Image (tube, rainbow, N blue to C red; front, side):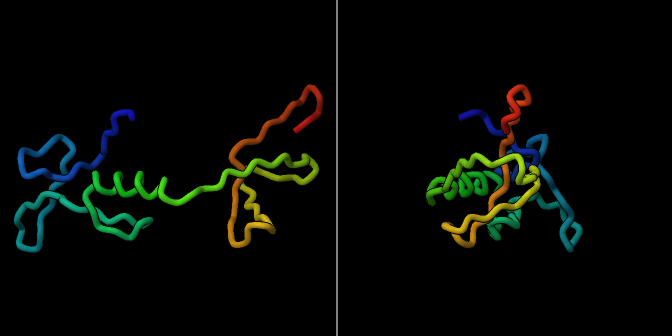
Length: 106
């Protein structure tokens, strides 16, 4: 894997790094940021743990990659939300649009 750098780092009880965040608590004492809340997962974890949680959970459930050849006449835009009758309850967005202007194929 490539090296991953965080914009906000948590304090590791050693020396603060350049991007370690500290704040004043209710008593006015300086505290270092240890945990952050992630709205997507609804969990309070350290930044590094959020990344591990995301990577592990991303591959535990099977994902679907669907490929459709859509007609140009449908007028589908990149921001169009699509649904499929065979897979109910799922919504899809267009990831790639290819146009062949030479032969008029899209």
